[in-house]
Image (cartoon, rainbow, N blue to C red; front, side, top):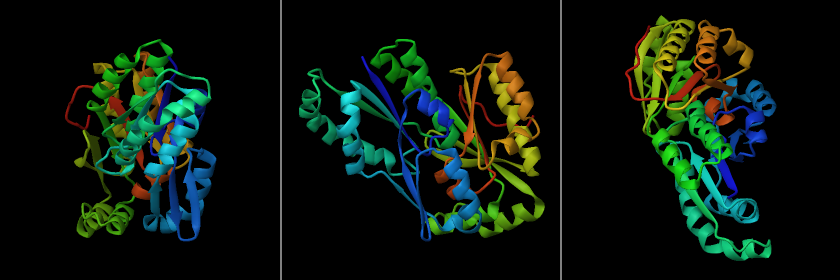
Length: 315
């Protein structure tokens, strides 16, 4: 059976990994003033747009995901011919309409695919599964990597579906933002009052950085640590301890809101890479999606992995 994998462009995975494994990306279009870019996970284009626009006016950006009709047209024009079963994994439905759009499109796709497949010489049925990853950014990548791994190992559709749904509910994402003022400005633009002016001002004045945690569709601060580099080092140490304690899948995903050389120079990064290598855990690192950067600002660090729940603890 030919199994296809679809993600949206908020899913932070390396561009070459997406291309090598034929992962289809549902682009999210970003508009800042008169500048428009459809985010297809092109790291060079993302960095160019970042340097030109995000620093100054990124908090004003409008983001537009693929509509129901655009998703339907993509499947009927390509995917129902190229594949027999497709797993479509989306950013958490609590933060974006992409999941709902994909669910609505799936009904039309399953109603309309037969003549398209028959015209291409396929008389067998087509099926698709839309999965809410229940997370954001680098943490979304965990399920996509496992889908590729299981597909390559010859797992069947039911085995893949059960594992992806298990991972989605056990994936943990952590983010350290650099600029709380940016987060506050972005939140105001979107009508989200979760980052108040007072907390942003105090955090910036005292150089206190929150550790933001994503799990099961929820996002919340779980710690406050003085200094960005210190906070990142604590996060990398915590991740290393989770790796040594055993993950549900041998995958750690990292993303950074800028040039990856900057992330690789942060304290604790090389130690985490060494721990992952010693424990046979693959690390996937990528430039954060443009969608992610306009929402959380430049220079943010995100870590994602799947494991049994354990409270964040600075170590």
